Length: 253
Image (cartoon, rainbow, N blue to C red; front, top):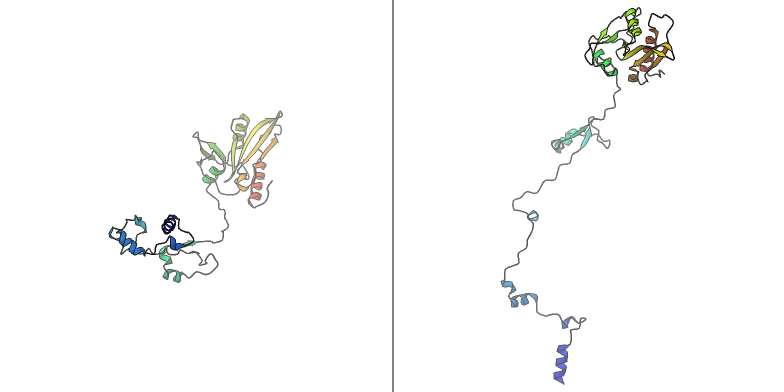
């Protein structure tokens, strides 16, 4: 019976609730010495080179703080920047970003050379052989304003000063494909042509340059008088007056 009890006890599984039945009472060091594990070389562990700290290596210095202040010495938060203090702290060596916030200066307009102005506002006109004056009104009291004349080279024009009424009327009566271009001032041109509108002979005046003062271009269709021999240059004066009003900030139309 004792033998049976011993055999039954050895065949039974240890009770998980009783650590004494399945835990060893021998210290781990003695177990390692008994198994010969201490005499074997230690296992090799692969470690990335980046995580190793080499002897003598210097610790990376923290990046210097960069500060921004405006040209008048005001920091973005409204405080006054101390330039001497910032220089002593090394901020100047790190690179100082100076930002200017000067108020927007009003734009002033100045008369440009006639060659540049006419080229800017007259589209295909890129060069003028003879310069015109920079006056606001180039219409003489006893004659017609200057005329742009093509020199035969594409984009090249010359200026005819004081054209005669006879030659102008002859060119308009001939009815060429292109209108006559009059220079009213350095920035304003007027194209003139005689056309037939509803079986009526009419003057056709068109501006080019009003868009420079924020206005739409103007087209005037005026019926010709019987046997009219002079170009009605009062239309030119009207264009110049509208240009002046628009340049002063008013609404010309």
